[in-house]
Image (cartoon, rainbow, N blue to C red; front, side, top):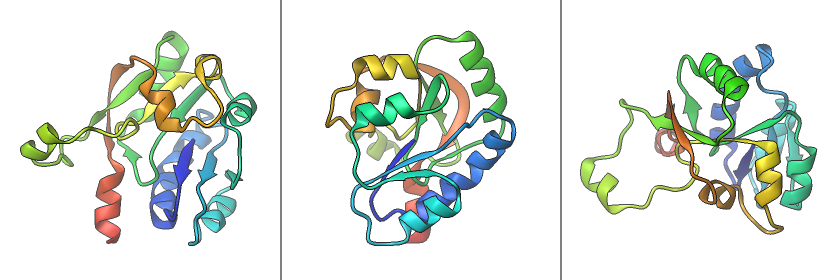
Length: 169
């Protein structure tokens, strides 16, 4: 599940790694929540078979999501090798929300890491659907949902979305 606004290239980047999860039966569907994009975001989502919403109520979206777990990511983020196995095992055994580990190869300089507040979905977010539905209020963003939980950290690394944005700039 992703929120977008003019993230056509970044969305395509993220969808490419989710294909492997879909093949393995781990990703049941991808939901794209758009905030008024004027680029080809809707076309990319449609071509990839995503459920695309230009207007929505977050409560309805969460209730209608397939599967018992939700993965929230920023468009442009990419999980690294081994994510399918770790996420599959975690959702089978775990009950708590989780985040992924920041990529060792794509880190901001130390002074930036110390001085900036990390966006709530920069390291992705995985949580049980029932927990998300129970805590969400209309008007909340996906980042708000992530902020309201204390997650564990998974060992799978994630390349943050800012890396893809920098590459396409």
